Length: 188
Ligand SMILES: *[C@@H]1O[C@H](CO)[C@@H](O)[C@H](O)[C@H]1NC(C)=O
Ligand SMILES: *[C@@H]1O[C@H](CO)[C@@H](O)[C@H](O)[C@H]1NC(C)=O
Ligand SMILES: *[C@@H]1O[C@H](CO)[C@@H](O)[C@H](O)[C@H]1NC(C)=O
Ligand SMILES: *[C@@H]1O[C@H](CO)[C@@H](O)[C@H](O)[C@H]1NC(C)=O
Ligand SMILES: *[C@@H]1O[C@H](CO)[C@@H](O)[C@H](O)[C@H]1NC(C)=O
Image 1 (cartoon, protein in one colour):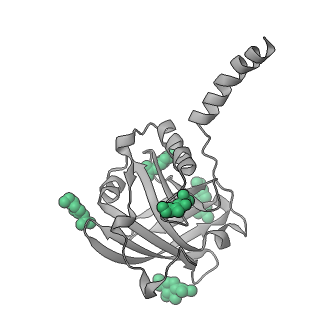
Image 2: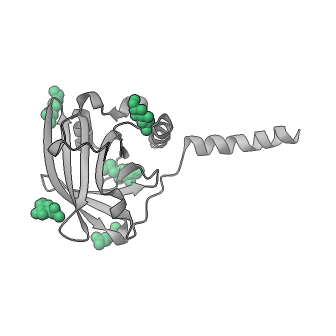
Image 3: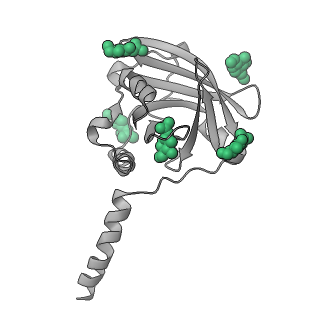
């Protein structure tokens, strides 16, 4: 009887937390940036922001590296992307706004996008772009694939933002591009 009651009381809460994990932003401190330096693989993402959507549709594979920039509050970014069929390399910079716990990335066209990092596993990088009002979320990881559990966790976030399975764009290692200098971040 008691077991039934606690099961009954516990179930809705368990279901609620399982289906809608909170999107908790990372509060930046002096250890945040050093922890995200190095190579990442972009795994999946969803957005309702038309310019992002168009790019997500074209990206078949993406590896990117964060390295220290010229200033303390700057990181250099190198992206290796397969856009449709073609591998391209892009260099850019992001500004680290410590007090706002945000990264500001300025693209080739000079358009700034502001992102928050969402708390997650240390080997995952979940970004939420806050510059406009469309729901969006992207998942990157230290390895080109993530565990089933991590993927489920990410999808739970997406479902809570109102995305369905068809809205999610996935990359694939089948479309991997060679990395500069033959670097293999998986082994590094
Ligand atoms: C960062 O990139 C800029 C070019 O955007 C370059 O001049 C600078 O040397 C790079 N910084 C480091 C530490 O590599
Ligand atoms: C990728 O292909 C789509 C469909 O063919 C095209 O509309 C888009 O412009 C292409 N994007 C890039 C960056 O090549
Ligand atoms: C932090 O965010 C506030 C409001 O969003 C903005 O006014 C301010 O300029 C930001 N700080 C910096 C250093 O950009
Ligand atoms: C991304 O989603 C967040 C809410 O999760 C929203 O505040 C933000 O405006 C969205 N950004 C874009 C670029 O659509
Ligand atoms: C990634 O895939 C490889 C090979 O299929 C597998 O051995 C590895 O455990 C996977 N990594 C994760 C984090 O699931």
